[in-house]
Length: 290
Length: 305
Image (cartoon, rainbow over all chains, first blue to last red; front, side):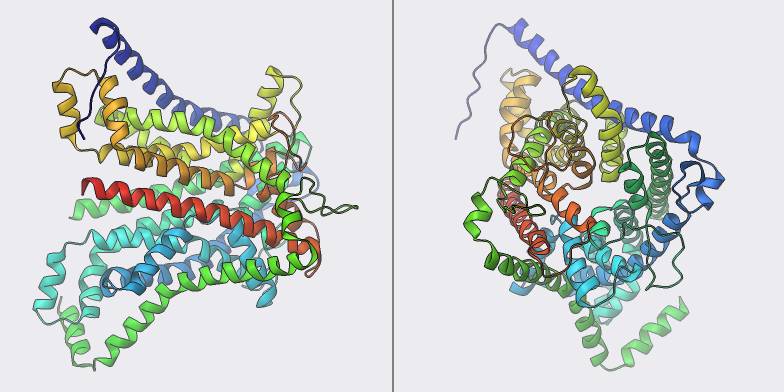
């Protein structure tokens, strides 16, 4: 097909249109930055006044001035810790299988498609699955364990996709060298491919976990939205989490609770920022070593 | 180094069954995804089947009244579907033009330094938890809307769909950016050589060449908007109704699911089953959208590789 390019108007007008279009795109792009700034300023202005040590060390309360996020913070730590313990080995293992052992047969093609589609399933559907299988089916109740297993399923596709990218980035020559020296496939992966892919896998994993920290809907589904004034002591304990506590406060009509929610959001965003900074740091360090 | 070499030798002297066991274990890890998919489908299908023994599928899919928690009960899902589509349409109105314009700016105009500023901002926007967007909608966007149009209800579709639009914007921008950058430079150079302006190159050569990738990004983003839960639960209200007026309170499929799970609904009741029936509809819609988008993406990759 030979493309044709019809133009309208004289050259001056066409040039002016081109300039206008460039500005139009630039302004819309800047709007993204402005939106982010407005979001942050609005939240900070609402929440900063409530943010003090007491806010971090008190349990939630009916009285806004006494309310804090201790149980939510510890709940999130438990939830994410256990999610990481499940999701990292399984996700990395799956990625290693698909990249290093899979080959190009029909089963692996199906696995590819399944993982790509799972990444697009709405988080609340994972919540329904968690409710039906973990909470009721396996009788785990509204425990941290049920929450962590649900979160694991949710972030597994993200970890697999990120880890596969990291493994793909390892040069083939490393594998060839290992095989040439008589290493078995697993030895090649264990001692050569995995160490060089590790920074990439860690970065992807941290980003996936930071997604899990902010997830609310699946936890509401498995019944985590209850009044919890204790920190979990074991995997079978009830729990709450930061986004759940924030949602709980937003859902109340009083202004004070909305401001508490803003303070909670500031803590949540700080945690996410810390995790992202860690990911960026790992990425940079790996680049420097190379 | 010595320890590493020793390890390698130790493993090597071990029998080959060691390798097969590890390979099997890794295969099981990969197979978890298949189990999850089967699990989702089985769970949704089982309870939805039970639901359809109480309510006819036709009454569910084409009924225009959704009152499963009140007498007289009615199980027409159209109001929920309509609410979701209202949100999706509003989100598309915000996310599609801004996302595409940002992508064009990033791939065609921006200097590397500007890319270095805009890309991280988009990543941060994409990483903000949805509950935060919900808070923003309720405490910032809604009051603003009510000042502009006083007739706006406290919970309204407009506010929620605006923030859902912001939420899907980074996804559209970065996927479209990828698609535009995959267009070979020779096409641009050819168009410039025959005297086209940058506007003509962008809109008549680059964008059409990347069209399937761009459309795929829209479809993926809209599927994300369909499944978006927290912002609509917080800001759009809980009034299932068929309306085109974005200033009214509505209810989406996702926020209905949250509403039911917040209440104490015993397993086995029709109300409990509605959760899965609505979930199954949601899952089907997003799955169809995702499969369609991946087909488009595959087609677009084949053109230039």
